[in-house]
Image (cartoon, rainbow, N blue to C red; front, side):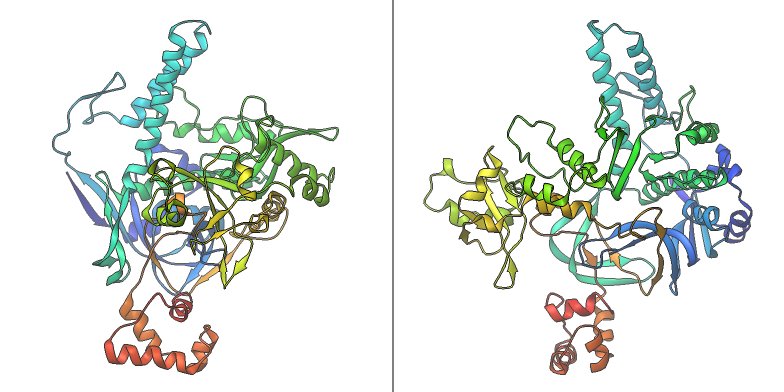
Length: 550
């Protein structure tokens, strides 16, 4: 099997300038969208990945107005999405279409969870989804005491997990090596890097599929936003596969998408699920759906209707009698909003409880931090690889470094506050509750968390207008999740060392001072080393300042 690449620049320019929202209700239109487009962004609404917080904690994606002197590649679904929302077609420089030719060798019929699939003619996701729908229909008609109920439920869940795994992740799998090596980086530019770890692609890695799946999903949500605008309404929030809309618009919006149903049975693409609920949103993935009547706040009975993002990593701070402790915290957040309680009430209730997380000794770096605690202890009592441990969050700075408490695992989580612990950075044994972050502070910070991807503080937020001065090449984002509460480990940035050296050599002392390098002597040392040895250390504090700004 091969991919044929066709230049369809003129055709794409004409298509984008004339496309209508109703055209995207036609399934045949979507077959034309496997196209990558080079554009010159000029206040176009596009996915923009950047450090929105501005504190080097990671790159996130926001859908915002983007302008840039650099030409950029985007998928056609994203370009169309911008046109739907702005009414202005982005300036297209080049467009290439990808057309599959032939069939992959070695394909054969297979049985998957008891379902026969022929990859030469079947869409595996479609077949699995339809089978799951049939099982769900059977479940509705099955007696709750019937022996086959559990079997049907388990099979439906297994299919759901498999479909989710097949839908995206395997096509973008990257596995970073443990050591730095020299390799070529390709993008709008290409260069050699010696300061990064090579990311080996997984067996089914196919970035074109991954890009089209995600951009297609974004276009779907953009269509929902555009349709609501036509209906004179707005959405409160969008998540990966859902949109929160006024109840009187929900059914109409669902019907709008139904012509795109790809299945051989009547499966709704969108369906109204949660009715007559209030929405309270703090920031991305920090929201709750709830009932509010006569000063009483209630959550849905059959499922959790609040997000745990930003709270889910915490261990239960309450005695075992409080099982649904996240609901307790969300209740108090909403009571604070409705002024049923005050911040002082939050302080009093939670000030003697502390924010503590459970992690795993998943790397040698983490294990080495327990070296002192393990000394002179028999093997049985030592902290070992893949043991659990507890970690709290830094609140005190000592010797210009934040103290990060680590402690051996215990089911009595709050107990570690009153016992000796290890500082993650220094390995020193310390003790004292002042080193631990009170849960009251965590909750109040959670409530005040800003939505950094948009402009505005409250109400309907506005998209940011971003002027991109340059591009950064990054690698895999979600690596070493276990270690993140200890050190923020984001995507590695692929550095064009030669370009950095030339930019440093061209800096004047005044320019360097504006970028954070205060002393002429520091800049001179950098330049002298580059001129003499052709080298620059990218890990020094002063060079990092320049890397983040030049």
